[in-house]
Image 1 (cartoon, rainbow, N blue to C red):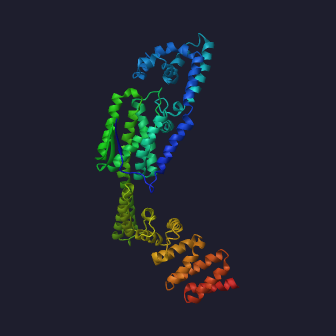
Image 2: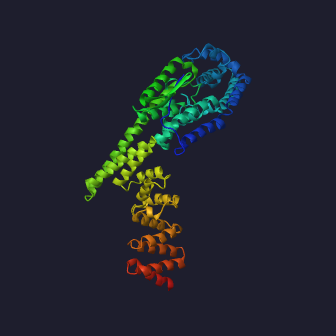
Image 3: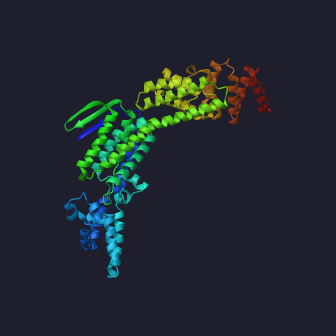
Amino acid sequence: MFIVIPTEVLPSKKNIPWLTIVLAIALIFSFIVFQSDDEKKLNNAIQFYQASDLFTEEVELFKRYKNTEQGLNRYTDLSIVDLEGPSRIYLMILDPGFRHYVALHQSENQNENPDNYLKWQSFNKQLDYLVNQISYVQYGASPQNQSVLTLITYQFLHSGWPHLLGNLLFLFIFSTGVELLYGRITTVCLFISTGIFGGLLFNVLAGTAFTPLIGASASISGLMAAYAVYFGSKKINFFAWLGVYFNHYQWPAFVVLLFWLLKELIFQVVDSESGIAYLAHFGGLCSGALLGLTIKYLLPFILRTKIETNLNTNQNDNSHEGSTQQQSKLKSLELFQSAQEKIRTLDFNRAKNDLKLSLKLNPNNLKAAESLYHIVKLQPQSEDFKFSLNSIFEQPLKFEQWDSFCLKVSNQHTTDIRIERLSIDSFFNLLQRQLRNDQVDLNKAKVEQAKKYYAQQEQLPQLLFQWSMALAKRNRLRTAVKELNYLANYYGETSYGQAAIEQLKRLKG
């Protein structure tokens, strides 16, 4: 067998594919918890069928049924051995078409032997109950058991350990890359939706009622296609294996996608009796390619159009905002989107440069600031980390939506944030954000640093007054009085110095 797998995007310690791991755990959990007793449940149903004499009574009916138009259509791919040998008992139990045929026959003859009909009804009801206890009968996808639920649940069921382990291998190969390229939410949506489409296509063209479709192969095929269309005509690294020969190659991604599609169609023709759902794989590949292209090209276009519309609206509503500023925002957006593409391909250096330019053009781009921080946070001594800190902490205090992110960064880097590495605005904005979010304990050392380094700055009296009020609010009156005295003595001529004097009078009174 000729196997081609991509090696362009690989996991690392910095990019652990958590979603892929969760999906793998879900597949293993489903198999162990829901399917471990399936063989036993099927044997119980067969034993009951034989012991109740239903099998003996219905053999002749099965011979007639397989020659009806419905039977010929259903069993067209089955051999004489399947239809007349011991394995026919599986068809007699699991095929809803045959069970319905038997029910019609019994109903037509119930007046001739009412007792026999009631006995058959009782046995048939028990048989249905036993059969429906089998997980792949209840949750597998088939033309007669097709719903949104079964089109999802079938993806998490497997026929045995070899089937499961094979799918887990390819899940890790492809889902890891797609997760890094598209993101976790998009990847799980691709997994489920392409599995649904693959199941639908298979059931329409090749599905059988007595062999429900199970397995994650269609979903994984969808991820394969999404992986390929992400790179399009770009040559990327692949590992190819044919028999004893294997090697690494660089091929255009879309050429490999065409190979995958063609392979599934060929095997559907030449290997139709294997029981492998090649059409489900084909459906997964087709839907994965379409969805991948939509996500890659259409959604960014919609987002860009929406932002351009908002900018044009702002231009009409706010005449003071010039076209230069709007152009800067658009260019910042383009750079941010470009950076996201580079991050998905693990090109962090170029992504970092795009994000820095994006923030210079639009300093209020929270998403860009978050992305840059996550790239440089492991290098706290670098100039890029310094740039990232200042771009975060310099945000005006009126932007309260920045508070949680600013405080998260400051709490994670208490030893890395040194006063000499921050601009004056960054330092004072950070302290005031901590104060208004009741993080008083984190401020003491920084306030002492501010007294030493920024004694002449006009922002300091305001900061000291807010610091004193925060202490008083926490009933730390002695420390609050000390800070208010410092403010009154050194900055008594300022408005905040005068306010400190008034507060001291109230506290002493």
